[in-house]
Length: 99
Image (cartoon, rainbow, N blue to C red; front, side, top):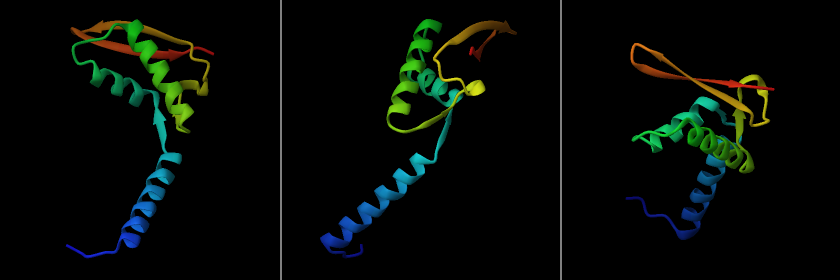
């Protein structure tokens, strides 16, 4: 291992945090990333209503910490319409953002 002083370690840590923060400030999240994150946390299933509420909550939280969400149609009014369609036994969830 490399021997570094406490000051050097603090500097490396500070630079690392600054780099990560800069990446986070410039990152764009899509609505699909938010939906995927929620679905991955509910592998046993989730109702459309709970999915909608959780995605809205996650979107608000992400916006509060400075994240940019690429919302369909660039509308940020939290009005979403979910519709489920069956195709060959696979549930497809389509999301439309209503202005």
